[in-house]
Amino acid sequence: MEMWFSEFHTPDVKHSIRVNRHLYSRQSEYQRIDIFETPEFGRVLTLDGNVMLTERDEFIYDEMITHVPMSVHKEAKDILVIGAGDGGVVRELTRYDRVRHIDLVEMDPMVVEACRAYLPGNACRLDDRRVHLHYENALRFIRRCEAKYDLIIVDSSDPFGPSEGLFTREFYGNCYNALKDDGIMVNQQGSPFYAEDAHAMQRSHKRIASTFQISRVYQAHIPTFAAGYWLFGFASKKYHPVDDLDAEAWNALNLRTRYYTTRLHKGAFYLPAFLEDMLKEVED
Amino acid sequence: MEMWFSEFHTPDVKHSIRVNRHLYSRQSEYQRIDIFETPEFGRVLTLDGNVMLTERDEFIYDEMITHVPMSVHKEAKDILVIGAGDGGVVRELTRYDRVRHIDLVEMDPMVVEACRAYLPGNACRLDDRRVHLHYENALRFIRRCEAKYDLIIVDSSDPFGPSEGLFTREFYGNCYNALKDDGIMVNQQGSPFYAEDAHAMQRSHKRIASTFQISRVYQAHIPTFAAGYWLFGFASKKYHPVDDLDAEAWNALNLRTRYYTTRLHKGAFYLPAFLEDMLKEVED
Image (cartoon, rainbow over all chains, first blue to last red):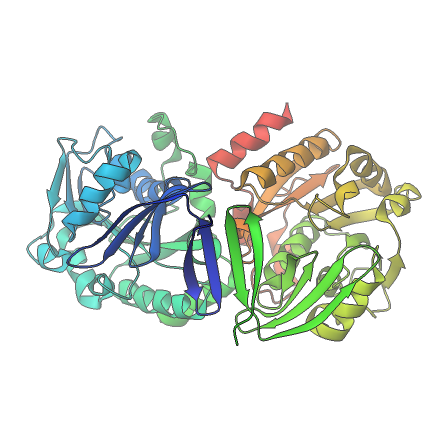
């Protein structure tokens, strides 16, 4: 028997992964949740048919969205994580002894339940005593917060569908207000390669750049995402993502990582010419 | 009607591209050559069913394999290009006024013929007066050369099939001898993500590292190659790929590029932790 999961990265490009078993499939109030067992990528979580993570390459995403801001903001202790019900970001954050409080706001309890059952490598630190889980709409949650967080990590799904509100100017403004005076917001910022993705990335970069004093984009190779090429947004009130990196301090923490290094951190902000042009186009 | 071209990146991962028309298909003495017209990537050249280039993303590969060594070796004038019958590397090289002589050694005349007919964006500079085309086995060609070239660019297909000989210790040794005292060899070095690719990359890196004084690996996002994540090898008798980069001199040339920048050049050598480990493993 042959079983394949396919995702259309555009109507004309398809990425297919051989499947051994379809482990989980449920329709929640918000989305369809599936987990597959695959020979190449281990377990794969999809929401509405889009790959959210695979056991084989989630470390790239989770390390890059977490350690880049954490190595720049050396005092980050109070942290808000939006989305990310799989627990991968929380797992990376709880490795820092200095972290005091993590609010994790995930709209869909069924995602957390599925990941606890089938993706323990991601969900393993959701019960850390510093983690506070809120099953709530992040747009509503964030309106109540003022100057409360050192770092906000927006680990949303794509801007088409249930996460749409996490790419609006209003939401970014509320994140700004929820951050302390030296706060940082990091978000998954899509992919610059295919036209529709690139357009969405430009739109949200424009909104973030007009909200925050400092706004930069950084990149990583994530094989199971569109074009294998993924971006993150780094928005900040004070810290510059490269100039304020304290490599020595971060390396002294002795956190073992498989993708992130403080050298790669810098390189991740050195973007191709076509992407620099796309960003400049919307920054003025 | 639906028509798709699919490439297996591993037996368990498949990348598929919608096809409008199958423009060209011939079996040469060495390989099967196909050219497809596609809505997402423009024209696509495949050899034995593997994507060699697409009109949409070839600029990434061709700029990175050419401008990285050309910006480090500011005097590179005499250049050997191996493979690359499509003409993309030659197109980038002929943009430098200082280049005096390019030997292009391509084993398969039918590749050149097909690209001249269907991929003029790549083949457009094959008739530059400085370009000397040799339809010959590169392994034999290189044995006759001594201290002749400033730069050798090995733009081979994968190490499984007709290009196998371009990944041997003997070949790298002959390249070394064919280079002047400050010469550089750059090669396409595969992908580090899937196990079989990673293993081949390690094997050839080991051979290059034991042949040249300086041997480094650099990376680029190439969406139509395996995992979207591609590597190049930079091997050199004298120049260091980052320390000897003269960004100011290169930028003064005013070559417009779409991927390469002198800042990205540096970042391309800042590798993920897992890849640094893979390279170290075979360097000792």
